[in-house]
Image (cartoon, rainbow, N blue to C red; front, side):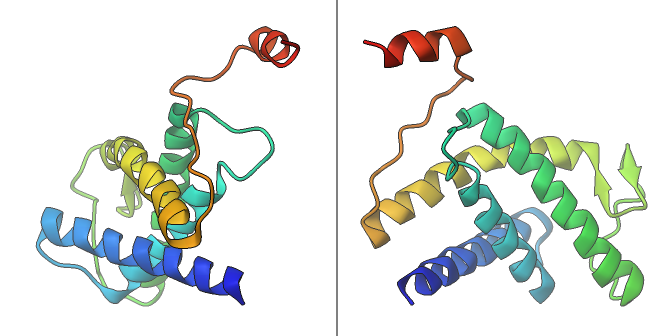
Length: 150
Protein backbone atom coordinates (compact mmCIF):
# COMPACT_ATOMS: atom_id res chain seq x y z
CA UNK A 1 0.00 0.00 0.00
CA UNK A 2 2.87 2.36 0.82
CA UNK A 3 4.34 1.84 -2.67
CA UNK A 4 0.97 2.65 -4.24
CA UNK A 5 0.71 5.88 -2.22
CA UNK A 6 4.29 6.83 -3.17
CA UNK A 7 3.70 6.18 -6.87
CA UNK A 8 0.36 8.03 -6.79
CA UNK A 9 1.98 11.02 -5.07
CA UNK A 10 4.82 11.16 -7.61
CA UNK A 11 2.35 10.72 -10.50
CA UNK A 12 0.18 13.60 -9.24
CA UNK A 13 3.23 15.80 -8.68
CA UNK A 14 4.31 15.21 -12.27
CA UNK A 15 0.82 15.82 -13.59
CA UNK A 16 0.47 19.10 -11.72
CA UNK A 17 3.98 20.21 -12.65
CA UNK A 18 3.41 19.49 -16.34
CA UNK A 19 0.16 21.44 -16.23
CA UNK A 20 1.90 24.39 -14.57
CA UNK A 21 4.62 24.38 -17.22
CA UNK A 22 1.92 24.46 -19.90
CA UNK A 23 0.06 27.28 -18.15
CA UNK A 24 3.24 29.35 -17.99
CA UNK A 25 4.31 28.54 -21.57
CA UNK A 26 1.00 28.50 -23.48
CA UNK A 27 -1.40 30.15 -21.07
CA UNK A 28 -3.61 27.06 -20.86
CA UNK A 29 -3.62 23.30 -20.52
CA UNK A 30 -5.88 20.27 -20.90
CA UNK A 31 -6.69 17.47 -18.43
CA UNK A 32 -4.94 14.97 -20.72
CA UNK A 33 -1.68 16.77 -19.96
CA UNK A 34 -2.07 15.90 -16.27
CA UNK A 35 -1.96 12.22 -17.19
CA UNK A 36 0.89 12.68 -19.67
CA UNK A 37 2.87 14.62 -17.06
CA UNK A 38 2.24 12.00 -14.39
CA UNK A 39 3.47 9.26 -16.68
CA UNK A 40 6.54 11.31 -17.64
CA UNK A 41 7.49 12.11 -14.03
CA UNK A 42 7.06 8.47 -13.05
CA UNK A 43 9.32 7.38 -15.93
CA UNK A 44 11.92 10.05 -15.09
CA UNK A 45 12.03 8.80 -11.52
CA UNK A 46 12.48 5.19 -12.55
CA UNK A 47 15.60 5.85 -14.64
CA UNK A 48 17.95 5.90 -11.64
CA UNK A 49 16.33 2.97 -9.84
CA UNK A 50 18.45 0.39 -11.67
CA UNK A 51 21.64 -1.14 -10.29
CA UNK A 52 23.65 0.86 -12.83
CA UNK A 53 22.97 4.51 -12.04
CA UNK A 54 23.11 6.62 -15.21
CA UNK A 55 24.68 10.06 -14.98
CA UNK A 56 22.50 13.14 -14.68
CA UNK A 57 22.99 14.05 -18.35
CA UNK A 58 22.27 10.49 -19.49
CA UNK A 59 19.06 10.59 -17.45
CA UNK A 60 18.19 14.01 -18.91
CA UNK A 61 18.66 12.88 -22.51
CA UNK A 62 16.70 9.66 -21.89
CA UNK A 63 14.00 11.66 -20.10
CA UNK A 64 13.73 14.13 -22.97
CA UNK A 65 13.35 11.27 -25.45
CA UNK A 66 10.78 9.50 -23.27
CA UNK A 67 8.78 12.69 -22.68
CA UNK A 68 8.78 13.28 -26.42
CA UNK A 69 7.52 9.72 -26.96
CA UNK A 70 4.75 10.19 -24.38
CA UNK A 71 3.79 13.51 -26.01
CA UNK A 72 3.70 11.86 -29.43
CA UNK A 73 1.49 9.00 -28.23
CA UNK A 74 -0.71 11.45 -26.31
CA UNK A 75 -0.99 13.61 -29.41
CA UNK A 76 -1.97 10.65 -31.56
CA UNK A 77 -4.70 9.73 -29.08
CA UNK A 78 -5.96 13.14 -27.96
CA UNK A 79 -5.48 15.22 -31.10
CA UNK A 80 -5.71 12.85 -34.03
CA UNK A 81 -7.86 9.95 -32.81
CA UNK A 82 -10.24 11.86 -30.52
CA UNK A 83 -10.00 15.12 -32.50
CA UNK A 84 -9.67 17.35 -29.41
CA UNK A 85 -7.00 19.58 -31.03
CA UNK A 86 -5.23 20.29 -27.75
CA UNK A 87 -2.03 21.31 -29.59
CA UNK A 88 -0.69 21.51 -33.12
CA UNK A 89 3.03 21.91 -33.79
CA UNK A 90 2.68 21.68 -37.57
CA UNK A 91 3.86 25.29 -37.90
CA UNK A 92 7.05 24.61 -35.96
CA UNK A 93 10.30 23.36 -37.51
CA UNK A 94 11.19 19.67 -37.53
CA UNK A 95 7.77 18.47 -36.39
CA UNK A 96 6.32 15.00 -36.75
CA UNK A 97 2.64 14.99 -37.71
CA UNK A 98 2.23 18.26 -35.78
CA UNK A 99 2.44 16.36 -32.47
CA UNK A 100 6.11 16.75 -31.50
CA UNK A 101 9.01 18.87 -32.69
CA UNK A 102 12.76 18.85 -32.19
CA UNK A 103 13.03 22.27 -30.47
CA UNK A 104 10.59 21.18 -27.74
CA UNK A 105 12.36 17.83 -27.40
CA UNK A 106 15.57 19.73 -26.65
CA UNK A 107 13.70 21.87 -24.14
CA UNK A 108 12.41 18.71 -22.43
CA UNK A 109 16.00 17.51 -22.00
CA UNK A 110 16.84 20.74 -20.15
CA UNK A 111 13.64 20.70 -18.07
CA UNK A 112 14.33 17.10 -17.09
CA UNK A 113 17.31 18.13 -14.96
CA UNK A 114 15.26 19.95 -12.28
CA UNK A 115 12.60 17.22 -12.55
CA UNK A 116 15.21 14.55 -11.74
CA UNK A 117 16.35 16.48 -8.67
CA UNK A 118 12.75 17.18 -7.60
CA UNK A 119 11.79 13.52 -7.86
CA UNK A 120 14.82 12.47 -5.80
CA UNK A 121 14.10 15.20 -3.24
CA UNK A 122 10.44 14.19 -2.88
CA UNK A 123 11.43 10.56 -2.36
CA UNK A 124 13.87 11.70 0.33
CA UNK A 125 11.57 14.13 2.17
CA UNK A 126 8.19 12.42 1.83
CA UNK A 127 9.18 8.76 1.83
CA UNK A 128 12.44 8.88 3.82
CA UNK A 129 14.51 7.34 1.04
CA UNK A 130 18.23 8.17 1.01
CA UNK A 131 19.05 11.26 -1.03
CA UNK A 132 20.66 10.18 -4.29
CA UNK A 133 23.96 11.62 -5.39
CA UNK A 134 23.83 12.49 -9.06
CA UNK A 135 26.93 12.19 -11.22
CA UNK A 136 27.01 14.93 -13.83
CA UNK A 137 28.79 12.89 -16.52
CA UNK A 138 28.87 9.17 -17.34
CA UNK A 139 31.48 7.20 -15.44
CA UNK A 140 34.47 5.80 -17.30
CA UNK A 141 34.30 1.98 -17.01
CA UNK A 142 37.97 1.55 -16.00
CA UNK A 143 37.58 4.21 -13.32
CA UNK A 144 34.56 2.42 -11.80
CA UNK A 145 36.53 -0.79 -11.33
CA UNK A 146 39.56 0.90 -9.78
CA UNK A 147 37.39 3.00 -7.48
CA UNK A 148 35.54 -0.10 -6.26
CA UNK A 149 38.77 -1.98 -5.50
CA UNK A 150 40.02 0.69 -3.08
